[in-house]
Amino acid sequence: MKKILVVAQFTQLPGEKGNNRSRFKLICEMLVKKGYEVTVATSRFRELDRTFRKVETDELNQAPYKIEILDEVGYFKNISLRRIYSMWTFKNSLREYLKNTKENYNLVYCCVPGLDSALIAGKYASKKNIPFLIDVQDVWPEVMYDLVLDIPVVSKTLFLPMQINANKVYAMADGIMAVSETYLDIAKKKNTKSKLNDYVFIGTDLEKFDNDINSSNFYNIEKPNDEFWIVYIGSLGHSYDIYTFIEGTKIAIEKGINVRPIILGSGPLEKDFKEYANKIGSNAFFTGWVDYATMGSYLKKSDAVINAIKRKAPQSITNKVGDYLSSGKPFLNGSQNLEFLDLLKEYKFGENYEPENPESLAKSIQKLFSYSKEKRAMMGESARKLAELKFDRKKTYPEIISMIDKLSK
Image (cartoon, rainbow, N blue to C red; front, side, top):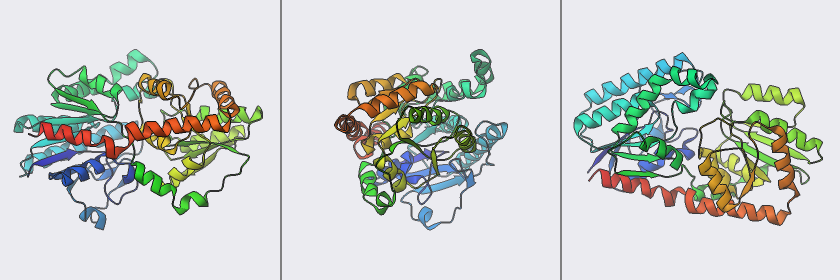
């Protein structure tokens, strides 16, 4: 039986909040069903909610794969020296685990980021002469340039050590998987040896999404017939254009549209966004973190969804896109990522607006609202069609398993 080591510092584990959307949990389960023996090396610290894992739980013990929980000191702010130190401690824990393990792995499959741990995993794979497959979930340090200091030359100089590490990780890979073509292209430019390169969107489990919509959650959410709901789901952090969403919907209200912004999720700027909404007299409704079934029910109750991303944010096809598309609702899109814009142009499932421009968003809301219900329904059907073709994990994730099969021969 072939053995796979999965290094995923930021993943969720069985029984934990957020595991319904965990890419690596599903991949590990699929690998086990395929006959692989899988070990997941992850952190004791949960990045999702800044808490520490309780190791002895029934769900963890019943997982069909081994779980190695490695020490990390943890951090409180996304952008901080403490986070850099925390990642360094996880890297050292991983190094110690790999130094002492008696397992003879046939392949290392590594989530990128984190970069420090990926470097350790890549060096281990090279030493053992086994394939090293990376899965690029985000691009560091690009995502941080304009969030820390909006002076390009200074930002790039400040993060040069991290960029060097990223390039090393990309170059070491024997195979490159990514969550978008955008990220795949970034990694491929630094790699001269990888012959297996592909991307698979994070996507969603369409069957589960649909089943959850039919649960009681859907019927417990009351939506007034005269309100036009626009829903945002996900992180309330620096890359997401929530200020524009709050102000743009208020402008739309002043123009006579009874719109209600619904904001699902939590994050480091949640308090700031709430204070801003109160300051300008917005009717935005913040739910905080909700479970997956409730999130899907809000999406299904909505009239539209919003992809609210800041102008300079490097995000491409984010987690939330699969859930948005699955809901079959038209989009208001602020992302300027070319890959996403091409999908929007081809499938015609929404309207664009200029990011960080509330007036532009208000105009797009007016435009979408002016369409007949039939036209909005057609846009939603196009979104759902795209979800079924390219975002349904049960159809797309076998491509990841296929790459692992080929590399581990």
